[in-house]
Length: 198
Image 1 (cartoon, rainbow, N blue to C red):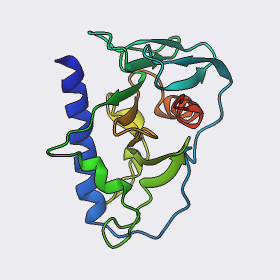
Image 2: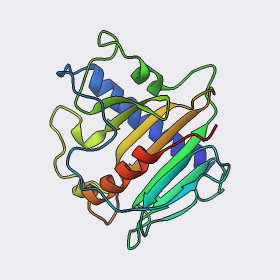
Image 3: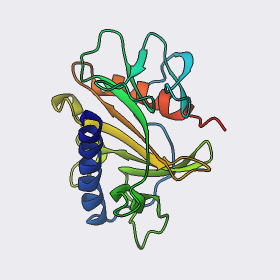
Image 4: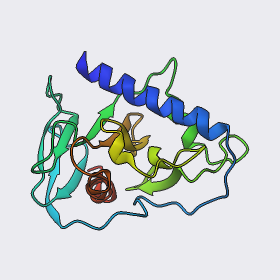
C-alpha cells in the first residue's frame, strides 16, 4: 500500500508538472542527465536493486536499502550520512498500466507540437532507454530558486521504459534537512550511473 501511495504521489506531482509544461512554451535546451548547478560528488561502490534489474553507483558514504515499509525487491532507497528521513533518492521499476498508461508517457514523445520544450524537462538516453527528467525547481511561471524552503518536494524525477521490456522505471530525488543542492548532486551521480543489466 505504501509503495502504491509513493507511486501515486510521484505520478500526481509529475501530472502537475505536465500541465504546467503544456501551458508554457520555452526555447529548446540540450538534453542532459545532470543539474546545472550542482557539484560532482565522489562515487562509492556499485550496487543494484534487490532483484538486480537496475544497477547504479551511489555517492561515497551513502547507504542503500530496500524501500520501506515492504522492502520490495524492485525498489531501492539511497540516503546520505547525516540526512533526515526526507533526504532520499528512490529508484524503482514498476509494471506498466496497460489500461490507463502513465502521465509520464507523454513526456517520452519527442515532438514539440505535442510536448513543448521547457527548461524543467530534459529528454535523454539512459543505458539505451528513452528517459525524461523533470527538475521541479525549474518549473514556470517562476523558477523556485530556493528549494531549501520546500522540504519533502521531489526536486528531480526521472522516468523511462526499461530497455527490452515494457516495465517502467522511476527515480525520485528529494531533500529534507539537507540542502537541496547537495541532494541534487547525489541524484545526478546516481542517475548518470544507472544501468539495466541484460
